[in-house]
Image (tube, rainbow, N blue to C red; front, top):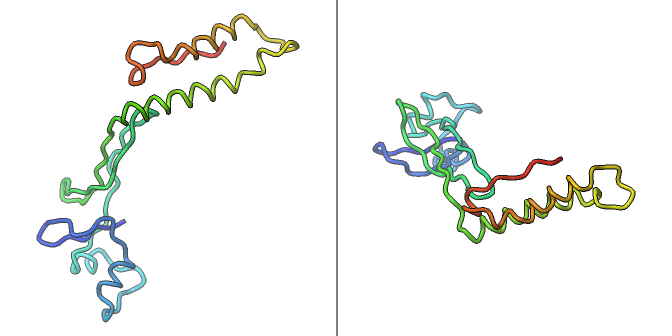
Length: 142
């Protein structure tokens, strides 16, 4: 991934070698242009920045680039999802976990049904936890 820079300002990101060839159709470029050749056209390789962790309540944005220690670097940011979306995602995860252990409640399942009932109830009670949907504690499977 590349970035096009003019006067130390981002012109286009993301940018590609195909973009470079399209921007300069009368210029013949080698198959793999060197960093020096690219720099002469204001094009620089972009280093991957540190991607923050995310979960069902956050999403990660990474469509900006800045120069860090002389290297153009993709900058990532984690943002909270809207509450309605975070709630929907947590409920979806909870419903998936419940469906995965439905088999524990059939008559001939050879498991500790009482322990699984406690676990399944704890999953249903996720929405009642203080801080829902931003700060929840998932129950552990028996």
